[in-house]
Image 1: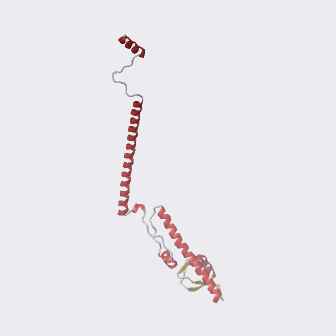
Image 2: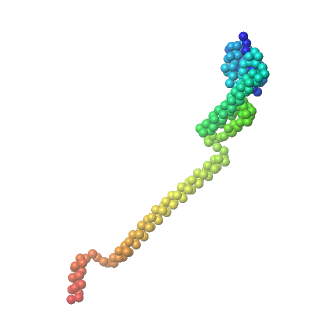
Image 3: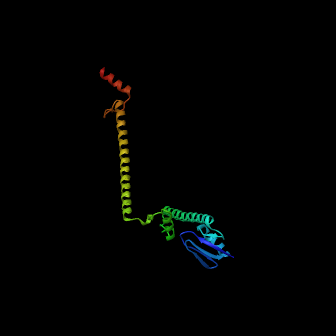
Length: 198
């Protein structure tokens, strides 16, 4: 028994069965034995390869072809999406960009999809990026110095404010005592004053 396989897509399909390759070109039909046919359909069915039965013509043929082309489109979209997702993940991990294979590029072109554009890992910085990073680091240092100076100035202002407040408090309590004033017993001082007046 044999099976007729049909490739309605615009790409070449290559399948291997018992060490032997079968190549089916775009819009090509091939007749193979049943075992090989089942194996190739398992390998390439999701990409759009279909079996044709005796009498598959007209509307039946068109329906099979449309379903196969829809599967092929879905396969291509998934390949492009997987490639993009992989490169976005690599970018987040700071890993190098993976060039898309020619087949993925063709899929993206056929479907009008965009591929993730090449990027450069952080350890492969351009001179311009390095210059900007140096300038930013210098500005960070300057800002740190200014912040430190502001803190020192704030501490000095607080100390001066405390000193002024302390002097004002002493003045409000009657001023400073005379320089040659000594501590004496008030009663004794009063007695001396009485003696002088007597």
